[in-house]
Amino acid sequence: MIIAVDGPAAAGKGTLARALAAHFGFHFLDTGSLYRMVALAVLSRGEDPRDPESATMAAATLDPKSWNAEALRDEMVGQAASIVAAIPSVRAALLNLQRSFAARKPGAVLDGRDIGTVVCPEAEAKIFVTASPQERARRRTAELAQRGKTIAYEAVLADIHKRDARDRSRSFAPLVPAGDAYVLDTTDLDINAAVAAAIRYVDSRVVKRSA
Ligand code: C5P
Image (cartoon, rainbow, N blue to C red; front, side):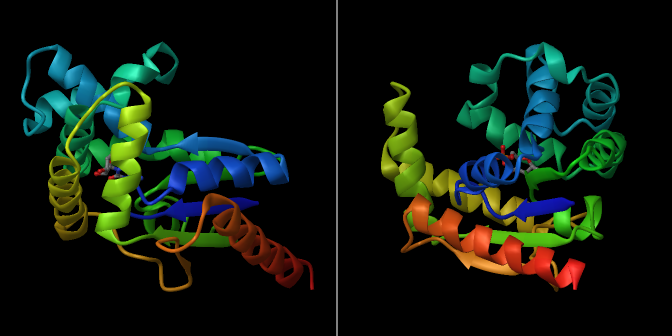
């Protein structure tokens, strides 16, 4: 079984997807980290993330085992990730890796932007997690502070608006809910309530499948 979890930056996809994977005993892949790895590889070579050749080469030679998780979470890397992610040949280079992960038994949860629309349109359960930009900025600011990084709320909000605009407006695999996705707005939900709602939805899909 495949569970696709998509949504904009800082909507809580990662936490929710990890909780679903733990609950159902499935494998978990944070596909955003793949785009972040590509971005970081390009930046560490002193190259431009807008350069399709450099970014595509980084995507084609990616070794997901060799990355420093802390460096990937940097906001600058997140912005550069959304730039390399708009390059069609970068997305194409990462497709097989994501699809083979999705085929793992007994099931997989993948979180990203285009899992339910492009990577696994056949996924049995599709959740589009969203929250207001202000709430997402509030959560991201708190998360950064917890990691010892003090960044002003306004700056985080501006980054979120910039990344949303880039992810939604790109012509290839833009951020949009799949037509058959369950849209989960977490603006007024805490994590436990959001996870409970997502589990109820996935359970309903399992029942439908076995009926
Ligand atoms: O989810 P995260 O913030 O780590 O993703 C970083 C960037 O990678 C996103 O802003 C988006 O542009 C890109 N991305 C994507 N498709 C995915 C996952 C992430 O385009 N499936």
